[in-house]
Length: 321
Ligand code: BGC
Image (cartoon, rainbow, N blue to C red; front, side):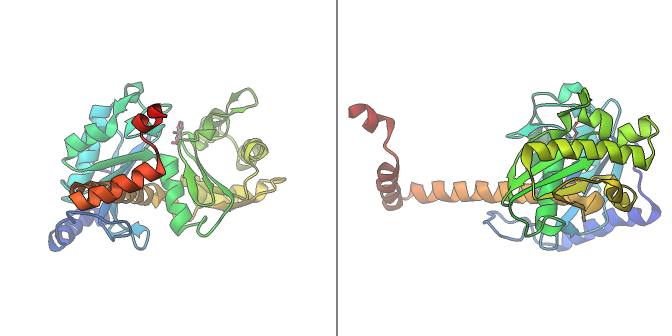
């Protein structure tokens, strides 16, 4: 498959490789809050794009590399394309965060509305980990975009209920309560005028039905009214590629009580959020490993046992009562 990069993007992998070579090896242990290099990959219906992420700035460290999504978009074929992306940065063996356009629980992909159905119930984190030779974290694409926007973009510092909606091939959603994500909310599949909302109000629906901005904005408005009725958010963040054209449709949307703003990270939100999710997962693993090591020391294990039995009785203690 031909990478869809421009001449200037062709430089990026080499630069990244040089940069990767001049960087130290990945840390053996990652602590919460450590600055870690992570590569983010965004798997979409039409393209698979990725780049190493500067996690302090919430931006791409170098220009991204993109390939077309293979058709059919089976796990095997997509894994090969993801490998192509990470190889272009010489990244094998180092941490990778990957988005997926469907429900993801504990690394397993559970739904596949706009990709090949063979993704359902695949342990995608394990599959990609094996193919890439890297530790891989997998996260829903809208959740990834939301994580990035809440930290570095339109949702920064916002409390209460914030809902990011991505409009593209489908409609993705990320719901935050006081900055904390409720994962896999799938609000694009709510019913709207007797149809699945994403079939009526995604940008694909706009293109498929040749809708004017005005007609499409009306459908988006009806959809936002429905989501607002259910969740009463303080803020809607409108993401997806169409957020670049926010001035064409946001002014046409009326009657929504919540504030409505366009996403700020545009096309890179998924890549940045995937890398952030991978860093969080690594930090959690490192913490668990650290606790296990501490518990391995007899005096620490004793302290932990005393604390644990005080905090939560064991099943044995309970049955003795
Ligand atoms: C999927 C979601 C995804 C959204 C955007 C929907 O069809 O069910 O998981 O976030 O499309 O890609």
